[in-house]
Image 1: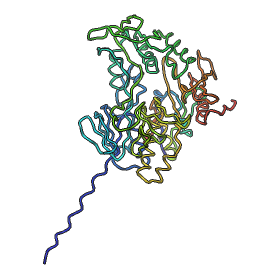
Image 2: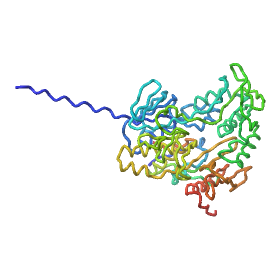
Image 3: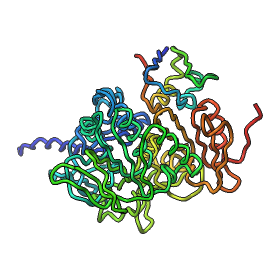
Image 4: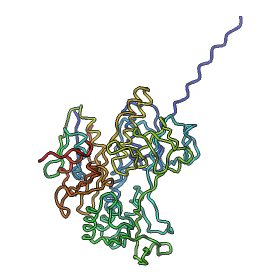
Length: 63
Length: 421
């Protein structure tokens, strides 16, 4: 399992992560980010890509 | 009996030359990470002029100016996979020799390489005017920190240039209580990438917050002996100024490649595998170009090579170059496959100015037709950018979730229509 953390004080809800890891991140109807805080190891590559593309660098994988 | 001398031990094989990445910003970092991720286990050296380890630039025109942000808070996290990368920071490449396969740094040391990655990026263009205290640019963390100390309440700030950086810095300086004037030869701010529809709206919102615009004007002189006191425009007006911020675009850091034969006419030309291309058309299997300096074709649009100064491009091109170069080291078959894998990264950019949260996908600057698709420009809106019958770009003011399906339309070639909602 991997644990995912988003610094919601930094997050600007751009939704770049949604494209990289659609099973983990989504924008709700109010344009706010929602995410799953833990996921199977098979999601690691996608979440790492989401970390890379976040303009605010708000996403962390907690080891 | 003659004694037989023991055979000398074989000389140790010389250490293999490293892959050398020149440029230690986001593009260089992403290339190093991608090389390791794709299985390249050999030596890897990154040469960078700045003393700071790679950091995220978007906060420089916003949070870094208005807060107490440090390098730590904007630095990219370092991954375990790249822990053994050798970082040569504070070192500038001054030349390269593609035949001898060396890069020479400013201490006159020639570094042999197995493969070279060019990631030296851009530097801000400067006005050809006398050096005075009070002149600033915003490209590096050190630039932003120096500027931050002068953006005091009541400071008279003149910004020359009305692109994204100029407008973002104008908003930040205004929020800090400065008197802000933007002078620009353009008719509207940010008009080249966004078109007149949104540019007019951004102008209105900036003006509503008290930013003064002097459009259609250039800066022709400065007033002040050692410290800036004023800025002279081409209509003769003199704007009293404590601070001048130059945001008039960028030049490519490609001078160190002079004499290599590479096509450096605008950045450095690369093919869709990010391999560097010479003026004579030679494609170099062991020389790659990534980031702002790369001029490359994007299969999402056409076969025209373009430089794209958007935030996501160093990451996308760095991953591409790392993937192809790692395959080059592994096997000829793998390399051939990697080169032929299509490359069509989605350009994406953002801008925050006052309450404006602007977000864009594609290349709106290519459009010959611009249409309001949803919402209303004076609140929240989505604007579509078309070249012929294809959508090539989309920009949202707010409406972040509603924007996402349009991104998909562009990625799929721009011809499909949105499903009715």
